[in-house]
Length: 267
Image 1: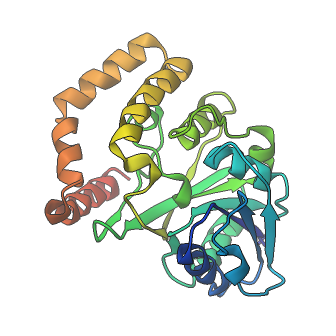
Image 2: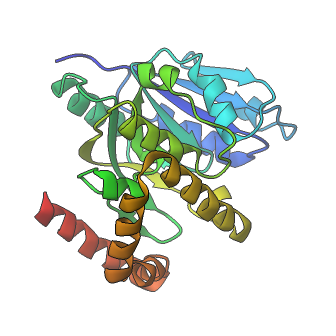
């Protein structure tokens, strides 16, 4: 079995104590074959200086043009076989995530350039299952978030994030990898990240921007007939209502359990 190495990239700007806790969850991993790259956009709050001294941590202080530009800068320094991007405030779900992911990818002979799993949303107090079967409709509707994805270093060097997509940069990257590069992501039955929720992309202003960027990205990678068919399928399956249920803290747990059961049945 191939031994897999990881680069865990954390981008930050005045993140306060969230940065220390996120890095701490990485250092607690049982799997030893990883590095941590902290890409700091010139913080002034002293948060980076509070990180422990550890040979596995590399700190890069450099101005950037936003989250995705910062990720690109860190990617150029990464040495691991696979890269995972964690936001400040997000943690690994448990201490054996990298051990399990390394075994899964190694057993699969690193045959895919994207491996992904599930996340736990702390603000909603529920596990959110990822779709185990990625096809064109899944790409339109619901891809795994970047905190749940391990990307091959070769892919990230070949296809960088586009910073002009301030909210949907990871979505554009995923669709480009799927439709243009022919990458076929592989699902792992692992909860990868404890996701903070309520972050940058979930403000009202950025949700509006997200809708505009989603339209631009899908029109770039999909045919008009596909988009029309997928929109009709979403309407007929009551997708707007299901989205509201998924965002309701009292109902999201039940909803995601049903969704996970449906995914298992399809699989």
